[in-house]
Length: 462
Image (cartoon, rainbow, N blue to C red; front, side):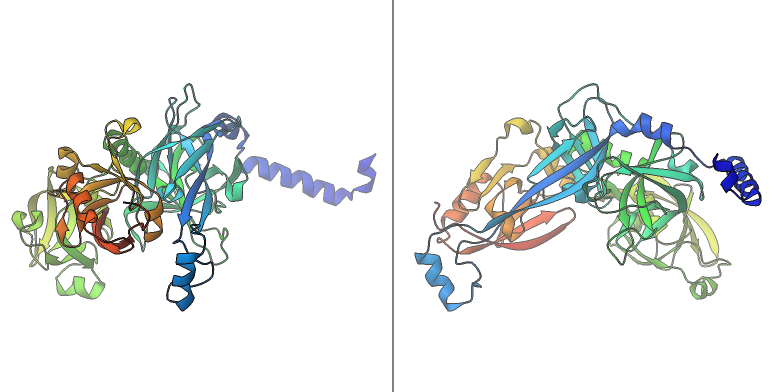
């Protein structure tokens, strides 16, 4: 009965359009989602932020602040910060991959499966440089993803994301690969996959699938002016993420290669001045004294064209090529120097890792609570000291009140003031000499950087 209301010409157009769509072979994602959806999880985190005791609304410099701090009830100001993200199961016994920024600073991490079961997750390790984290939940026989090969991805190929944007579990979005090997201003170690898949807050850490149902990336970042999707999303290639996760699983931290050079982009004008036909490669502007590159014979003005057999098209390619090499490995670099090619062999050094250090038996920590600071500290093993290339320090295992000063789980305390730390007993002796209510300067190492934090001693604790 409906046909009599349709214009015959319009009806023929609809039939023709349907046949064109069929011929175009537009993808059907239903089977992929049905098979892989159960391996994607929702991740929620809670972080307790504590302020100093005092009268609400008064800054510490206010004349009445000290009065209310002394005589008003001493109720610490605290609130909980919550965030959401996504992840995916990589082994049936409960290992889960996500972004480091999803779990950064979290006091509690909860994983919810598609069957509504919830588990408290342990953060095995997190690497901020690549934005990869590895979690573990106590469960068996879980559905896991299959991992694909990002190198085989082609620009224009269909890809699909599953995650929890704005907390909407198991949301599916699709698009195409827009570009490969993207370098973002703040990331030198990841050749991002750019897509136009709709990615929003909460999708972070979720998987990017190819049409074979294999994970080829971890959705990590978006470019946006509105706070939502604008068709520019970036995923960490799964091979990069897997190498990081393997190190986190085995040691809780990540080591990367370095050769000790400062490089800059080779412009067309600079290439011409050095006698190169194309502006390809990484131009060395300084060589670290005594570093691997100096020992191998690298010089300022050398242009590195290949490293370990891989072409250096742009200067931004070199850091991730070097970082991917296992420290201690000797590789060959092809260098342009004074109008001719030469081969140099260099033994790659180590960049200190940023992963969270994990004690061998973390379930039964041997650390000790330092009540005056509200932190639990543990002594580093010889292996950890060697890996971090430091002579001493203390591992921050758990933070409560000192979190307000910026201290985080996994930090390493190197010194109190200008006194290097060697043991827990030495640290306790040092802080016993400091009067109540005073601030102490802690030299804190986080990743490859060290800086001082001013932490206030609790007046009510000895």
